[in-house]
Amino acid sequence: MAVAPPGRRLARGAAALSDSAVRVPALGAFGYWMRRYRRTWRGSVVISVVNPLLFLAALGVGLGRLVDAHQSAHLSGVAYADFLAPGLLAASAMQNAFVEATYPVHEATRPRGAYPAAAATPLSPGDILTGHLMFIAFRIAVSALAFVLVLLAFGVTGPATGALLLPCVLLVGMAFAAPLCAWAVGVERPSRLNGAYRFVAMPLYLFSGTFFAVGQLPGWLQWAVTLTPLYHGTELVRGVALGTAPAGPAAAHAGYLAALALAGTVLAHRGYARRLHR
Amino acid sequence: MPACPRGWPALSGPVALVERSLVVYRHSWHLLLAEIFEPVLYLLSLGVGIGALVGEVPGLRPDQGGYAAFVAPALLATAAMNGAMDETTFNLYAKLRTLRTYDAILSTPLSVRDIAFGEVLWALLRGTAVTVVFAAALAAFGMVTSPWALLVLPGALLVGFAFASLGLAVVTFVRSWHDFQLVQLFMLPMFLFATTFYPLGVYPRPVQIVVECLPLYHAIQLIRLPATGVVDGGVAVAAGYLLILGTLTLALALRRLRTALVR
Image 1 (tube, rainbow over the protein chains, first blue to last red):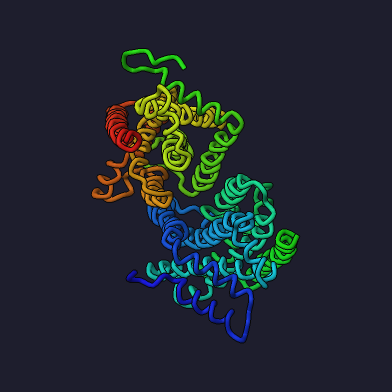
Image 2 (tube, chains in turn brown, cyan):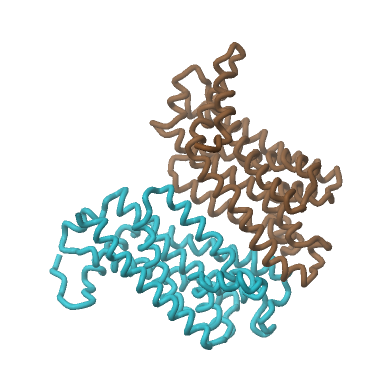
């Protein structure tokens, strides 16, 4: 292989740390997911990087020509591509969270999956969860980095803003990933996971202000959308990217997402313990 | 199992395979219905949300409806394509390689041709069911403005045939489940760039030529033109393209399935 897969050195590092005197058991679980990822990372590039970039090219540039000609007041003077790019960035973090925290978690809980095997070692359910969440965070961060680099290359954002975007996008992703882990670990039928994608992720993706301003929706729907996590994620990421976020609202959006990630982690801890030590 | 009657097309074999699919989906028909959910969501989000940002679509008179009326037929064509193609790619690959259903079927009086025709027929039925429900939803939203819109149904049938056959041909080249990512790598850009969301005119001429070669472009033309009340040479070209594509890929699929299944 000519190019070293992104996970290889980190996997080695994680393995070394978990074997060393420091002994961080969760790194063992993290290392397991990284070693798996060495074989499958190419496919994930298609899903998590190419997909949002194609949407950006088709809608931001193609549709953008129609939108920018119309000069709608809803966009308050922002070019459509600049409006859409941060929205797609936040939405792609959600999609990556759905891809990484539903099927893999469910698969791993099955009788011959990774979780029962890991639970038979000195790893605690908490370690198994932490290790997996670390891997999901890694996946979200790497995809976000690729996306931000493209935005930099096209001059949509500057380097300072780009650096600030990464933790915001990671926060959006983890606000979905932790609660999804808590849910998926207890799911018995895999068709439920498909249902969550179709009936939760897709509606959020299409109505949380990714493609158009939430202010365009009818009042009752607007109110419902402002309760959803992706709305706060989009507002946060777009505000930071366009430099239009006042500190107060930005902190409120970030606080909402952090609370969701935290609550999800606490619930997932309980769910993993119940599922893996019974 | 009665012996297949002689003569072409011998329908009893393909129909038996369709009957099998109906039995398989007896308890999970709601999964097929859920396929409508996604295009309808797209329509509401893009048609209504982005519609307000776009205003008028170049080349579309205001009385023909706004942006939603422009996007809706394209989403219908895409739904017909996906409905038919999901069946002859993912589901067919499972039956071909994972479940080895066809190996069992070939030990009955059914032939490879019965399998190929039967699967295309079933995919066609599935695509049509999706289309009919979606078209009914459009009519309910008040987005049907021209009597020519009735042509949407035979159009969707042709779209379903072309993509069911194309999927059948493609799946004979698939080596493992991972290869479907390559299929996606073609399908997603095609969905995004084949004038689904904006007219051909926004592209420079060289890109326009590439787009005009895409099968989904012709599928969208075949549905969009009559839906907006235009019936001209463009409809005939699109219908001809899809008919030729479907026939050629079905013939190819038949040849390749024979070598894959009969050893």
